[in-house]
Image (cartoon, rainbow, N blue to C red; front, top):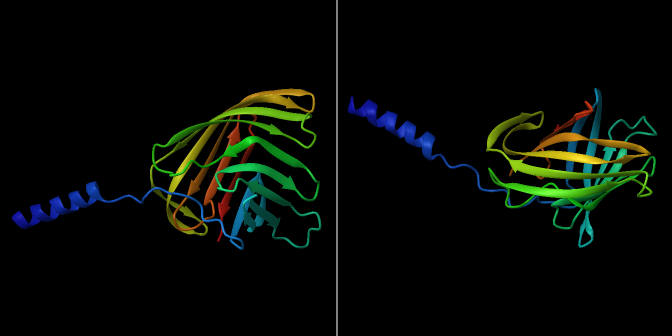
Amino acid sequence: MKKILAIALFLVGSIVFAEEPPPITGVDHKEGNVCLYEYNMSGKKVVLTQTTIRVDAQGIVLESVEVDGSKKDGLRFESILTPDGKAYVQHFFMATGDKTNFEPPSPWFSFPLQPAAKWPAKKTVRGNDGKSFVVTADTVHEVGKWAKLKVRAGEFMALQVKAKETFSGQDHGNRVSGTGTFSYWLTHDTPCILKGEYKNNFNTRGSFELIK
């Protein structure tokens, strides 16, 4: 009886006092890093290779290219981050020359990243000419608990960041306003974001998942 009780107490103690992973203190961006993703954009699936092509004092540049080489007009864009890797400055679409600028840079991360962390952000999103498309968004980011996440690249202990935003502005002469939610998951095991999901009140939905 004592032996059974001792085992039971040991198991309970293991559950209660099991250590969770330490906070994520940064994303290890290095030139040549490659992440393979499947994007689902309103039902259309596209596989993209994301490569870190520049890391310097000017910023970090991620180039995403559609894997299907048979498409001459396949999706291809660059994402520019601040030098510390915390915030997005711009998305640039090579095929069309379209740019999306974030003023100030849009902070996806606030390190150290740990459960219950929360941070607000306010940004203005501008299109090419800075006038036709101008939307201001107030966002609150909140970090969930450590949990196992299974994606096609494998199973990871990950933190979910959920960003809830309220936005309003002008889209080529039309007044727009609404709310949206973007969730994304990070881990210690890879610099690649594991998964992302977006939806808003206009029923716009999109997601991406790490393949390898």
